Image (tube, rainbow over all chains, first blue to last red):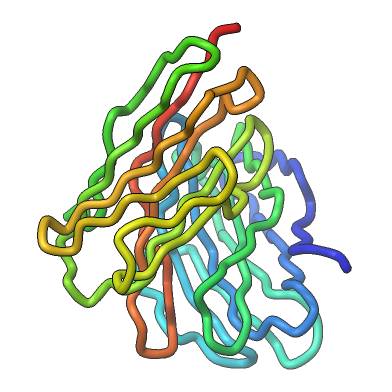
Length: 113
Length: 113
């Protein structure tokens, strides 16, 4: 009865490198949401995906950020050419077919040096 | 544009006291209002949730009060304990297949023993 699994838990990247964050939703969940959390701030919505579809990416920066949720495998949040301002905790959540309760993973803490 | 406004930003309560956190929303299409609890280094965990068809929901020491006409809802923690020390987030989501939770900025609660 595993919950939402995110990996890695901690990720350090140098400026200009790529960061790949993975999220495996709870069993039976088909909705995935990515959020970014900065220190002393709330959770900012980034993108909402279902299998093989991006439903809402209104919170995603227009450049360098992309997300996917393939038919097989985890959802991936990809940040290209990372900058110091990308340092944050990135959380993934999943929910069932009718939404409502969203369950969160432990997060990936990205540090850009 | 902050759709869910949460206050206070921080709260200090003595053990056994009542902790009260307030949220206000603007989008009248919201119909699901969860509260999340987050401990340092962890992901947010769903604590309790309410829909607008009821004015109050209680689970143990946690109570949500909901005022639809004022577009406000609040979390009351009765008999607050040091173990309740965490950051609390209110959220709101609307139907239509997505249920993307929109979060408040969070309240850092400290309960002194």
